[in-house]
Image 1 (cartoon, rainbow over the protein chains, first blue to last red):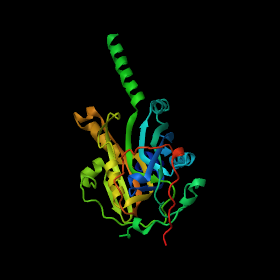
Image 2: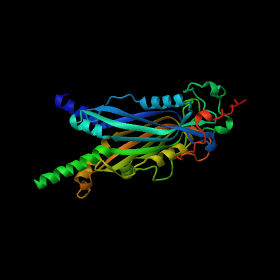
Image 3: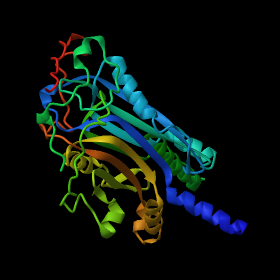
Image 4: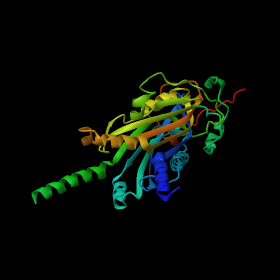
Length: 155
Length: 186
């Protein structure tokens, strides 16, 4: 393979993977089976992180689990069980734009923001491995099997 | 001198717009409640059918321009939504993936192993370049940005429609009574 062809292949592969590719894991489970009275809304949380990309967004430099870890930390700190009204936002801020201009795109950050309401859930947790350390007053809330009425037979 | 001043003023206005509002800014509200207590790894999965709605499950040229929407493969659901911007600043249409996420969540009543993300992919580059060569349209400089989400569909009984609504907070956490104990099934 000639050097020119190798460069073309590298560029094509890089472009195929996309620029500013971001993946954030949402910890736990997303549920739509809860009743209104089972969800008690508490504090609002707002997390903003700036993720760094190199070479016009082709090379991500950040940990994909930073948002998930921040969300879990906020919930554990406030004694919450989950998050409601979760909003995901992303944009190039003024500083991101200025840094891109100064470095001609070699250093290209992008800002991500996750907001929501920390909630307590007065419903049984779903069967699975526990994620939050149980609080002392939640000793009765040990993760247990979901009552049969909550589960549908898998189709 | 006057022309130079006008040019500088125009650049200053554009730059201030960019610096304050940000480029490719979009936000998506995620429906449902994120339960952080467990990872739901032992919850049974559902195998739903793809939605019938053509607006949510898009194919062909519409699928390329606006994203494929809600796609289902066995127990896994993916959401692809392409947001259209004008001059990278103004969201033109399809600026939120809430409807697609709501439909994906309604397939089984819950999702686990959820990932949300975005990218400026090859199709987005292609649409941006195509828009640059179309007369009149090129003046608006249309471009797109792709939102993606995926998860495994859980088999849960659907509950009340408390998705996406702001729930009132009656008391601070510290003043709340302890929740009732949960009884393990026999």
